[in-house]
Image (tube, rainbow, N blue to C red; front, side):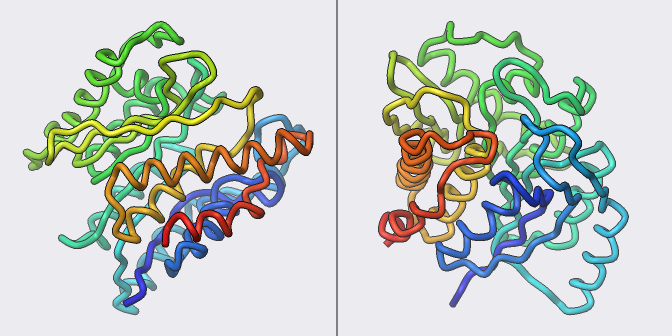
Length: 288
């Protein structure tokens, strides 16, 4: 039976990120993908100026209510960029309405990178995102987002494998702090990790198995917008195709780096995102 995911994030009409990458990637994975847009922007906010923005916060509850009337169920709920503390609170409501014992909830706490929060956010928002992550089955932060949620100093590139393993365990333990929840966050994937020059990847922690898994690929020079959204979407596609955490991490790494490599070789403007479209065939092959 075909699986369904509901993904909740913004639509940036130009610049591949958020829903404009999540929808095609999950669809390529054979997953029926329903969307709940939280805002619509003419472009994403990284590298563009003069963009338009329309907040859709007031539409979230009515859409959710209509879906409840339809008796809509879902195999997974996947949140990405959320623009306000009010939207964080709405996601908790949404989880309560649509999550059951079989529903996988994945939160990508998209709010920071390279040691800094995005301009729209502050530490209060980061702690709100931490509370939302407590409700998830799997979270996919980068190291910057992890340190803000854990209220730890950002280490830059000055870390080792023991530090990363400790960080993953601390992130997993956030789940046991949730009201009425004595369980750790089941799976945590930390992206953008590097232990040697020229190599980068992701490390995951499976709390149930008490196991760390990882995958590393060649690092490609440059900063490319939207790659975190691409990675998270491909990771979820792997998990919903019944791949192990280790295999899903590998698939997401190979697919994301393949898209970055194409863009790097083409020398296109990175603020428009990466050419993941020509890599969708390889994603389908990896998933099969």
